[in-house]
Amino acid sequence: MGLVAAKLKEAGFKDAEIIAHPYGLPIMVPFAWLRAPFIARRIAKQIEPDDIVIGHSNGAAIAWLMAEAGAPIKGAILINPALDSDKAMAPQVKWVHVFYNTCDGVVSLAKWIPFHFWGDQGKKGYSGNDARYIQHDVGCHQTDAITEHSFAIHDPTWSTIIANTAWEEAHA
Image (cartoon, rainbow, N blue to C red; front, side, top):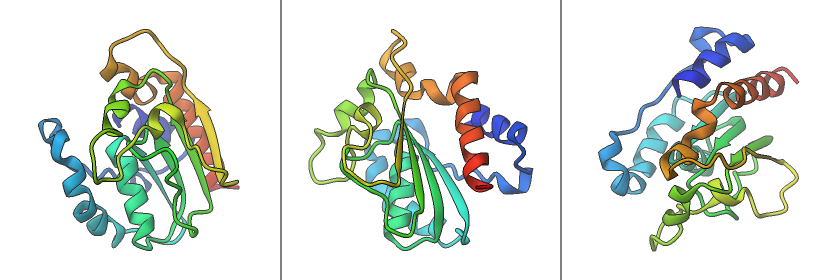
């Protein structure tokens, strides 16, 4: 999320406030959901009250797992989350912004893998009725599946919107 990190700095966050947690090589994607609970527990130990998490795809699923484990997350920005569309963040999370794309074919495939939490929230948005959720439809851009899935984190306009949303929520 290099562009998002740069936009977070432009929005006013300090370098020390932006911490990236890489969680594996792209070649491991088919097995990422197996490793996600272990990664979530490791990162959850580092979360402090009032921290905001920003996760793309499996990173959003890891954020959900961290919240389920009790991490004191203040708010979450989930970008094309690889989560079932009805999965809501744990109650301690005060607000959640979901950035989704109705042309995201990558997370559409994820919902068909049995016995896991991955799903198509990145394509449909959050389907529940939790008032903490604010939805952002990134729109379709007539590109390939991978580009659609990652459009918001590579597009300067959407990356700016994501960063400004984080800044505004952090200082509300």
